[in-house]
Image: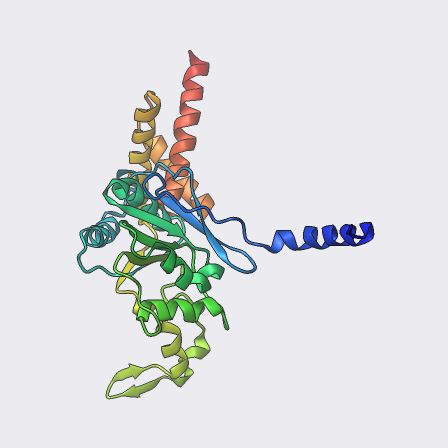
Length: 297
């Protein structure tokens, strides 16, 4: 019995409309060869998608944040050794190396079993599924969410809070959560939040609204703060970056008083002093200086 051609055509149209909504065929990640993956959430499910290559940034490339590097590296080494370690919140101003530090740790410790799964904020609702996908693997996984902040009613807020607290499900021993945020408490804070605060025997007790807001950040055992560089530190980092770039490219660009002045003006135009701004200046300074040397010769 043959089907009606018109029915066949309608079925084709239905299939073409539905197919983009279906999850992609899941291919198991080969963690022996793949060091990082992204979680991709579709309409009905989610899958881990291998990242073919990772940024080659190294710990020694991150200048001016030595205490922060030590704190997170020590925590990560404890984790890799099977010792107690904390979920970590890296917070502070933009451009100071928060997410770069996590990627540099992967570069340094992938051969010791460290693996990273990057999860977008909106996909944090899938944390139970992600954890199930790696539970029991002979590797140590950091679930990494970059530039995290929450607004009122975000579903991901409660899921992350539950994962950190272990109230509904506990993270397996081979999984930690690292997040970065510009906000120490991960949520907007307003002057009105403090209207419910009370003074009891000289001590401030925040209202329930504030306590609820800061309860999530309090569940991270490790807080690592990143702050705006002082001018002296910024100039020093720019100088060190210029030296590194000269070494890598085999050129000779002396660091002079003119370079220092130009670095300060660069940061003033950008309205910021951070490792990112220092690196950007060093790229510009070394590149332009070499071009001027070549024109002069």
